[in-house]
Each structure stands twice: as structure tokens, then as C-alpha cells.
Amino acid sequence: HEIRMLVKRIGICPLRNLYLDRIIFPFWCVWRVLQLRRQVSIGCVYTAQGQLPHLAGWMLQKFGFPWVVDIWDDLTKDINEMRFGKCHFSFVKYIYFTTVNAICCLILQQADALVCALEPSILKRYKINPKRVLAITNGVDETGLYTVRITKRGEIQTIAYIGDCAILRGVRTLLGAVTLVSKSVPSVKLVLAGPNHDWLVKEVNRLGLNEIVEIKGLVTHSEALAVIASSSVAVCPLRPIGDYPYTYPLKIFEYMSLGKAIVASDLPGISRVIKSEETGLLVPPESIEDWAKAILRLLNDEKLRRRLEETARRESTKFYWQEVQKPIWQLLEKKWLNKEEMYSG
Image 1 (spheres, rainbow, N blue to C red):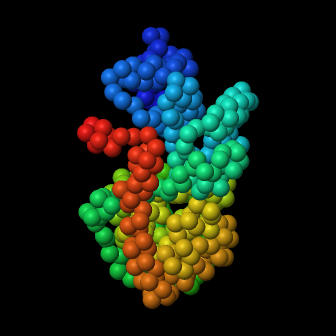
Image 2 (cartoon, helix red, strand yellow; image 1 turned 120 degrees about the vertical axis):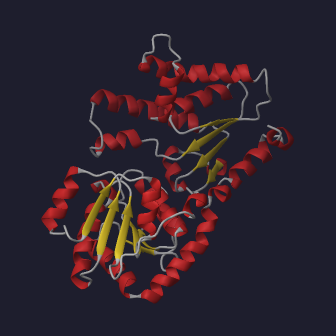
């Protein structure tokens, strides 16, 4: 989407045809970089996620530029979204994405380095040499956390979920768990802040959770942070579908930075950030009973909750963006960039 908007804004093709622009875009990138080389010293080419940037980086490598690839999504994401019904299935699109992804897998094997913001085991399927992979996580911008307004809810114990309220994100499992929790803790409240879906209201009505579940819908980032800060427990019930097991959901970093007791799915990516019984509780992704037990543990055991909150807040400093990006700069400085030129602008 970002590349498409960039292409549209630049208007590379005189006909202003979006499809032609997409085809021309990689060649335009090569032309622009070759122009820039006459004016400045270029240490390397760093490309963003996407088939078009990958193709541009690969072509520039043939002109002698070291090529660094940034990967933060599974290359088969477009195919998986069609398979799991997140977008309209088209046989032509399926063939297109399958072919393009196969080509991308081949050219990525030739990159000089890959910065991977996914759990690195996902790259095994692309046969990429692990010695050329710099594995990082997502992070959090701590500057936006200092102005968060906390709304006290009295005796109500609140569970916060931030993000897309889709079945694929595990929200149905969460609703089932809250149904069980409410039998032991009648005052519990679940607050959902994020894009809403038609099925959600129907499911809440079917389960009789109208008095327990608050659906806020799409909110601003500051409002989402306020929901987290006002909660007793924060949750991330991601399901093991597509590339989800290998991702680092941004919400868990914000949960940690705001010092929340966390319950999250036990998946490869999340488990690299949250250590069970230390900075949160990890549970099987789709087990309603296990989710209910974990949430109840935190609601009923204040000592455990406080310990996890303190540890999570302390460990979150490792994931501030300025810390996450340090290995990237170290890689670039060590191999391709002249420090004096880089810092002089």
C-alpha cells in the first residue's frame, strides 16, 4: 500500500496509469540512484518490504551497489490473505503473486544482507543463508507514553485488547475465555479498541456479553494507549495462521512499556519478547480454557500481577526504537558506510 501511494504521488508514467506505474517503478528507482551517484557517495542500497523494492535492489546490485533488504512480512502474505479469505480470491492474482514470490525468493538469496523483523526461522523456507541475516524485533516509541491519561474504573477489573478485532487475530477465543472468567469474576470488563467487524457484535450478543464487553472501534493511538494504561490485564490472542507465528505484534511492546500484566499466545515470535512467568504469561493460542485460567490467575493474584508488571516495564527498555535500530547502524557502518560522511549529512 505504501509503495502504491508513493507511485501514485510521484506519477512516474505520463499516462498516470497505476498498473503501468508499478511496472516502471523499479526501473525508475534504478535511474534515480544512478543519478544520485553522480552527486553523493552511496555506500549501499537499502530496500523496504515488497516485491517492487526487492526487484529494484536486485537490479542496483548488478550495477555494483551492496544491497541490504528489510523484511517485516512473510513474502507469501498476499497468497495467505487470499487463502484465508481476507481479500477477494482471484485465480489470476493467485498465479501472479505465486510467480512473483518465487522470483523474489530467488533474488533475495543474492542480497548482501537481510534485516529481518520476523522470527528468523521463517527464512528457512526461502533458503537464505542465516549468516547474512540480522534478526531484530519490532519496538516501541517511548516518547508517546509519558502523556497517557489513566482512567480509574473503581472496583472493575479490565482486560484490554488493542488491534484488529478479527477472528483471525484470535478475538473469538478471547470472547470465549472472558465468558468463563466472568463466572468467577462478575465485575470483569473486556475493552476492545480497534477496527470493528460485523461478526463481533453478533458474537457478543450471542454469548450474552453486552454488559461485559465494550467495543470502542477504531480509536486514535493516544486513546489506545489510555485503554492499555487503565487496564488490569492486557492480551494478545494471536492465532498460528499464515505469518502470524513469526511476527512481533506492536501491541505487546506497548503493553510492556506501560507496565501491564500480559497474557499472549505462545508463538515463536512473541516468545522471543515475552518470557512466560517473567514478563507475562504465554498460553496455547486457541485453547479457551487455558486463556481463561491465565487471565483468572492475574486477576486473582495481585502479587503475581505486580511482579510481571514491574519486570515487563523494566525489560521494555530493550525494545525502545533507538535500541532496536543500533544493530542495523552497526552492520551498515562496519561493512559499507563511512562514519564521517554519514554523520555529516
